[in-house]
Length: 212
Image (tube, rainbow, N blue to C red; front, side):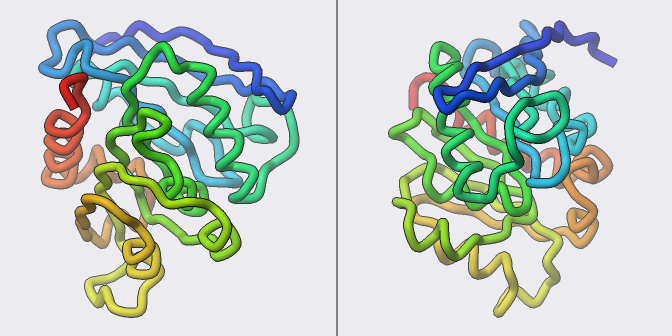
């Protein structure tokens, strides 16, 4: 198993709180070394441990990784945000690590609502959205932006009428969809599903690079 170079990170948000997490250096021998940074944002009510080994899988490709606890979660300061506050906080995190652009973004569940509003203006070229849930208030008030997005869900093979369909229909720009029932168990399951993991790896290698 690859031994990763990990470092603690603190980012002072303009709104006041400090968010804390980890940076993982991309493996120099990886095919995507030097091509960008992937930011991991956990679901509201969990913490950065939600992702299991997925950040390491991405770092093994050569991408740098930043993984943080949202305000009010884990080791971060502040109050727990609603989805609208999550959008503001993640926008500030991206501003705080702007020197690491371009970005890929991985988000989960209710926090994935922010994915529709983040994109090229924030140098977010690609997004992996896992079991996304659309917050109607945020969707009604926040702008939608272009980014290449892969939605990964375990919402059931009957796509029509599902939470995932509502979210997917709200997105603009290039978008793809993968269903696997085991993904309902959360992002940790990606490492246990070789075919799904291969799709995720190919997605980031193809769409997150400095030439884009």
